[in-house]
Image (tube, rainbow, N blue to C red; front, side, top):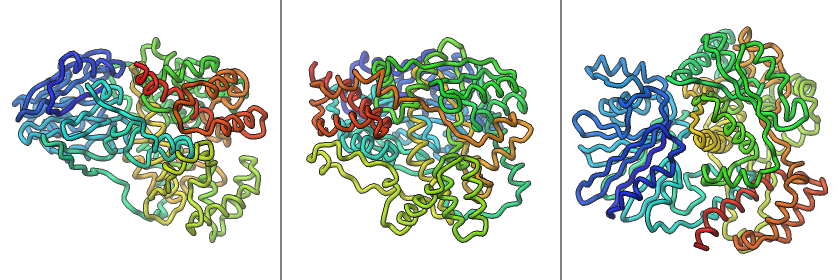
Length: 624
């Protein structure tokens, strides 16, 4: 795992600034760095790299990596887990290799297959190849966008980097806040900030996931997707075969992500997803694994899942660490996080996970596996049951599913009625899915609200299942992109590589083609995972009916520990200087939270983020 920086420019940039651009993301790769600066057709081209050594820790994997004939130069952030298989294919074509890792494989795969190579990769990546033969730079990101890659373009330059802060080091860039993104973040429950490639900074964008981009020396850009989930209708498959096939895919996904020349650990929450990964590593692949778990509060089963975690630790004989974040320094910690994130952070969950990662730094475990994507592949969220009920509306099994859901989760039956009414209105275009979440646009002043109020609608995949359509939106535009961005910044802040077995593209393709009944059955989600993990997971975890997720009691923190800080924020000159809020209305909202009449935890977290982000990047800069 690493960080990459580069540009094509009419301007000559001082060498010290080039190095500063790379140094600014040194946390992504503290083990080595490299620079390549040259001129072509009166254009200045720079490629920089900072390296976290995971595969082949020797100098043979140094970057920028130049081909033997000098025609191709690669800078690369990520891991292609199937590099061994691709390497054998290239050897059969006559290629030889000096290194034992994946970087040289990526370079020679591009030399052999060009842009078609990206479809062969199973992994996560953000990379740049300078193609001397065609005088162009090719940028590519992995299928779900685990690895970040931002760019800035005008008539005189094209700059790209793993993180925005590096782009901001380029001389004389006049960067302003992207208030459209601020509006999306604060008014729509964070879920709709990834419906486009814009960042929170004007004129800085992300390279699209599942895509590659070609930039010539005149700054012309060509974009092309190399992967997409195709439209499909779910099929009724043979049950035993589905369970076996899913199990084998799951095991192989974990197997590939255990490839490393350094120690590997696992985030362990006590839920189905992280437990499956930990148990497969130990029981099936015979790889003992170190686990890292967080306790965010006192209430068992909500903020403290240690009962389930201990079952897994005992069952897998794992080395383990329990970490309990301290909420007292939440403002200072968010300010510190923004030094690495550059953009506001989606939910308070990532505050707690940041503190866990910070405590992992001294554990000497540079690689961790996580369970991201399991909910979006296999129906793990509460509202997924409601979409499944809608899909079953003409089915004889609807009544029994609703009854099982009610008994298993002790949910209010009125939830079914209200949810079905909402879904019907969404289907009939009377409502949008965004209407399911509380709209906080009333906290802005009228001028700002009128300027940025948006008509948001996300396109989904074409299939018969409403549940599948919902999960598709979450995978590509909502929960997964936000989580992957936060996960990358949190872990890379402390030079730790995080890998996601559930986001193996083979597992995504297989899961999305499954009928609903393999995801939700008898009132429980993740049915196929539960069945395929028989004999692998502890039964207490495999059959658990509740779902906590990794959450924190921020609603109470914001009423007590952080109360004075929030009041000071709302009264501050810096907050007023942002110039977009109706502060009187905001204070009324906070008093409503303090009284316990409503829980505005999510919004208050986001408000704190926007304030500290704006103060860090814009107010301070203007004062200077």
